[in-house]
Image (spheres, rainbow, N blue to C red):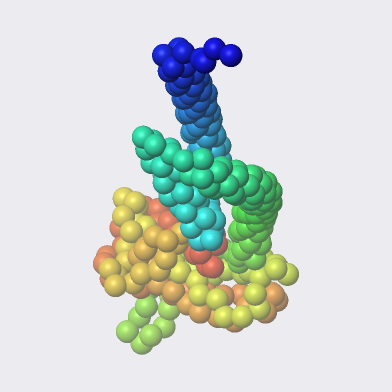
Amino acid sequence: MQEQDPVNKVDRNKVYFLIVVIAALLGINAYLYVKDKQQSSRFVTVSTEKERLNLEVEKIEAELDKVTLLNVNLSDKLAQEEKLAREKIAELKLDLQKGKLTQGDLDEAQDQIKELREFVKNYNDQIIRLEKENSYLKTERDSLKTTVNSYSEKTETLEKENQNLNAKVKVGAALKASNIDIQAYKVKSSGKNILVTRASTTNKLTVKFAIVSNPLANKNYHKVFLRVFDPAGNLIADESNLFEIDGQQMQYSSAIEFYYNDDETEYKIDWTNPKEFMKGVYSIILYADGYVMGKSQISLR
């Protein structure tokens, strides 16, 4: 049998080796290709998840802003919870803006976003409930205010009616003089009074009057003020003698006080003129209880 050529055997071994090397290179290339494709796919997946989470955070913040715009007065607890939520949102935004994030980072962010979403939902429910309560309280307050205003108006009306009624009662209770008679007298040195008609001989005037029966008048002491006017229309009175009518101070010539008992008693006021009497008509006005009681005149020759 003919022996195999050693040279050919070596060539065959080289070929086998080259085939193995080529196969190994092809395997390595295939592995690197698959690995690179997997890494690219993983990068795309992580980047997409990052963007999605960022949008979730923006949406949660927008929901929180929307609730805040309701302008409801928050309790200290709710205000603190809102503050913490906004701080967490700010942290998540910073984390998601980082250049590299692992899948673990994204999973953790996902859990935090889930918690935030649940918080905003509960927060929103509480704010809406508070808004409804505030709306109800506002309605109740407005209703109560309307009721109070209505009662105030009624009270004011009743007070005015009461004032008017009191004024009418006061007017009705005022004393009115009747049968007013003025007489002129000359007072002699002996003290005797002589009835006269001439101005030159008159020293004093005596005003006599009765009181009209009035069941409404107070059976009590009443003061009557006399004002005397000379023929020229000038008031004759002492400046220190003052009384009040409708809040206005007025001078009077003379006054008396008596007890009114709703009977037929006749009263009189004596008035001595500090000056000489003049020829002409003297007028008198009587006041009692803040109202005019009566008027009269006397003519002196």
